[in-house]
Image 1 (tube, rainbow, N blue to C red):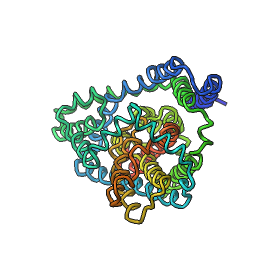
Image 2 (spheres, rainbow, N blue to C red):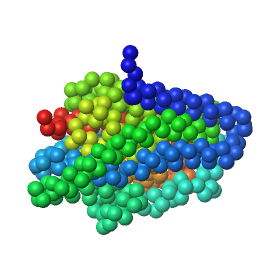
Image 3 (cartoon, one colour):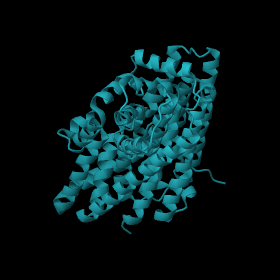
Image 4 (cartoon, rainbow, N blue to C red):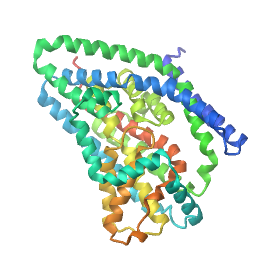
Length: 439
């Protein structure tokens, strides 16, 4: 039996995940939870520089060329509006379903009942007194609130300097500019053909580069997973937060293995689990890298070459989805916020749960495709619920409470990122029915 490169890569990435867990746990136990900083930095350096770094290197040219080619191949601007409308509808519908599902499950399971108050207070205090990147971002989110998230999205949709945004690695401004440029190049007809040919060649070259970078995935995933496990150890998964972790994984599993496959089967007329198998490299990479943006080149590669997704859909739906479609993140934020209120014994009524559904969905749209972005936007959701309760300041949920789940956030982020990428992939497959490639 002939073994193709995709089978070898899948086996390599899966092996990297397993070996990464073993190496990370070995380091954690050998140093009794105090792994030397040099060892952690070494693992992080190899994974982030020689794998994530290379994937990020191709992101801007890949997104720009894929969106321009995808938009121009659609042709009629009115057809683009129809496709864009269906895409945005899919994004918000699936995110809303994910959030409602998360709220129903966390309210039913009630993982915060009887939570260890000593552990809770210790973790919250450590977060409040610390000086981590997460704390700094949380303070910024608290200062800007939901309006700040809206303003940030609007600013990126209308970039004053798309080149500067690209240099800073901001994908939404690049997508916005490329979308407009693709329409313009289509409208001006033959005069735009040389530019479109250039971007078509650029896209082909970048995809070949992605093909080469993918061979580093097993090593990159191994180092990143080992770094994650070495910092927290697998024992943390059965500690005080075990019930919370199980609740999150249960909700993510139902959404990823039941809801999204059902949506794909109904609207995409596709066998969802065969398609999931075809997208396996992207899903495993998403789990290992913990970043939907960094996984985007792999997602496009798998969707086009193995999943039967049209070039039109892949070029438009997947880049946009990597920045705004966050099913897993929205679900996680809803579960985590309700859990934290339960930990502090603060009862939430239907009004507060409704606020969580709305704000978690909207805040997730503004969550960048980077590690732990959901932890930052969670502050916005907590603040919105606090304001609706009308309680004195000392009886509200402290924003430092997000520190309670900080220790396991990275592991859960790997899981929710996988669901994010799966949701993007499902959307691209559904839109392929509307925008197939020319025969």
